[in-house]
Length: 451
Image (tube, rainbow, N blue to C red; front, side):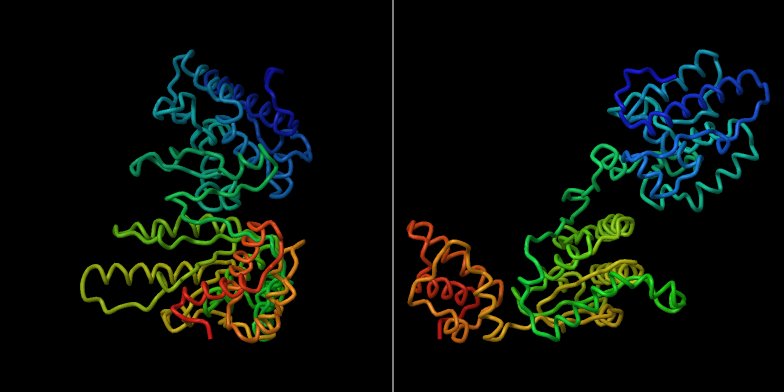
């Protein structure tokens, strides 16, 4: 039995560890004594899943006895390393070879316990019964639900090692959820060049023309009802999963904000891909970086947002040299991953004509984010005004909106400047001269002068 000092308040997880330890003891004794007993994991009386994070994983994914034992085995090195150490100690103390037990031990730099492999799981589930092992091996080869649902992952230490030598480890997402009861959000790194895109703004803060709003609503409808349309009405054989949209238009017109709000409204994470980190001068690295993002995104149903997408999705060149051939190869790889992605992908660019035709043919939506007209600009000015600051008497927002053509992003920058000046003076009044200076700064960015 597991000792009481194990600080796991999760009763369901604690009971699964107890079952795992009893199974290990049974398999070891049966292997050595050869008493030919049978123990079928499906006949074990498992604890009913509780409302703990571990219990919710079992309920959400309707895990079988086989899957619960496999998941508990993968979690053991992190949550109770001594449990699997017993497996090695018992074998060695009886001078029995460890080929049945499997596992990786003594081969890692920073961990000295036993890391379970598929061989370890097969031994726990089936002992040395070859017929049972073959049946289980098929499960791990083809349709392992734990892998499909991103609960565990396999690592192969060497390409020449047998399939069963792959390490069986819980994913970061699983460990994080068990520890915090919250979804795991990966951090931006060189191996994962993407960051979560969030916004504190709401749909009411997004000022767009009516046609653009209608087209965005189509994407919203697909997020909510796309799978129902495909699977309930017989279209899944004719139409691919996923939705691809191109947002194009001048900077500051709401492309990024719209992507963030689509995720916020539908409780989906939006990840902005850093193309400067994805693209590598080394052959094959770009595909590797993209594969890391796409593989994880597919499991988590993220919305992927590629800003300034023409840097990576631009028109392909004639293959004049090896560099051109590899660049075109990267585009072809991207095309395939985008076409196969089952979720929403949004590409944003300032100029639609810069995009490669092979991509645009596969897009469901082309949404033009136009510069706002004077009526929309007035709404943007009003919506952007800071709380508890006053407009000076000579500030006429309607006149400013009519006279100065600015994007929503530029208007936000002007409001930031005007507010900063008001706070700096400590009078908290938004003055006309500050509006004019702020607008001039935005015009200068584009090489223009005030009219």
